[in-house]
Amino acid sequence: MKMKASKISTLRTWGLLLVLGGMGLMVLGTSGIILFGQVGKIIAAIFMVIGILTCGASMFIYFWVGMLSTSAPVIECPECGKRTKMLGKTDRCMYCHTILTWDASQATNDSIGKERESSPSTTA
Image 1: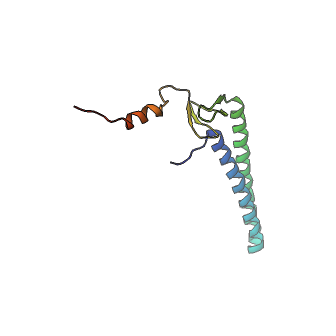
Image 2: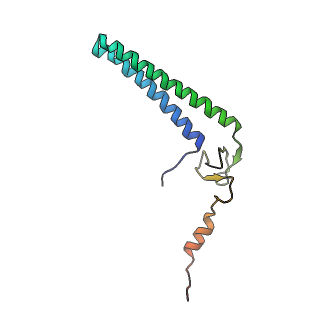
Image 3: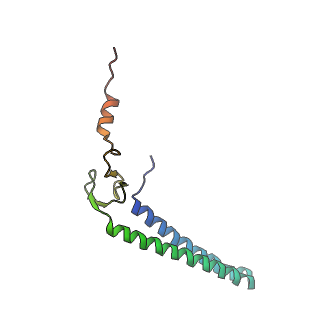
């Protein structure tokens, strides 16, 4: 089973990927000056603008996640006992990735499901 992260951690990961991608685009565009001479300056300018826009999008995502994080309720995870922030009706613990929910209809009780699977069914 693939480990999923909490919503806040996922958004922060996207912000980091955008920063790294934007910086990479700017470096790649700068190498166009060395490889292509005069045409490379145009290539560098285009890549520089795209890289700056990508870094700006990353800054927006980090700001947005920061605002979400300040208003997110802090709860204690029932599995690991650490305090974690929760966005929306369902989210995952930032540490142990346990699914957390406010909605009782979406909550699952694994111990009941395991007891049903392990107990032999007697049909007559």
